[in-house]
Image 1: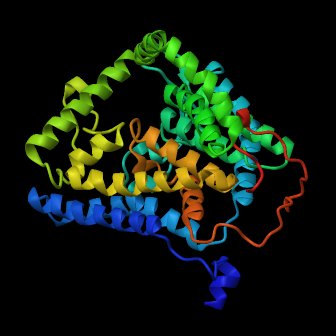
Image 2: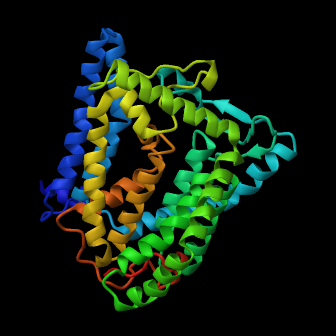
Length: 398
């Protein structure tokens, strides 16, 4: 045990709290539910083993990374510094990505031989410089993600993490780099998430301050006066959001309807056990894809959806209370909000290997002991407080 404390940074006084236990139980239940679905539809031993491996590469990670964050003494500053350094290299590589479609470079450079071990698709093993938007032909970038909206999700997560960097120059580089990824990925959800979460997290973290309520009072008054006009504006924005990529929105909606209908009529409790491709109407895309909840209902039934919903929203409830305690908890709250928002636009489990820093921070914030003995002054070579994105995230520990 002494070895673990010395070399792995385990917290001697750390205690696994009940939200972490919920994550472990919920993601373990996913495997049992998966086996039940396979048995109900007699899918065979081979398919069960393959799906179990898929569980280990997805849902299991969503529990193990928070668990690691809870038991390992990984500082928020270290993760923020690593994210900002990735931002530096993003700026170095960005000219090549942006120029690629205009100077005739191929879209795909190569596919890793690791594709032979299997996976959700070849895009996970391919090095892709850019893609062309179907029907339009305009370039769209996905950088180190398997597709462009996933790059947008990672950009949102990393922007909030980069905001905790205390070196002003690195913070600017990191935030701007991932903002460029969000823009170039042309992910509508990424821009909406940033616009919504910055003021929400800022307000929740300061809910016990009188100044917050003084600012909220005129806003509530204006909301009452112009509420009807605001609803019309929101409805128009939602229509514009859907029409920006009408074909994509149509396919997503159809995939959702098919998933819900087949879940209710064929496999209510434990789902179908495996993903199935849809009909020509949805361009043969997997039923329940692009949506964690529809995917869970189709593959794992209502029990699978509850296995994610219970720990996710329990974590949200805990961090809503803890958010005012310091930078770590505010950052963790923003991570949970990102996961909730993107659960309606992506399948979270297959992207866990990309947003794992968010899971580490969530686990650290839920642990019984979330502060280290290190001094409040920055130990990473910067004494300046820097700025925060729209003042949404405070850079000092509370």
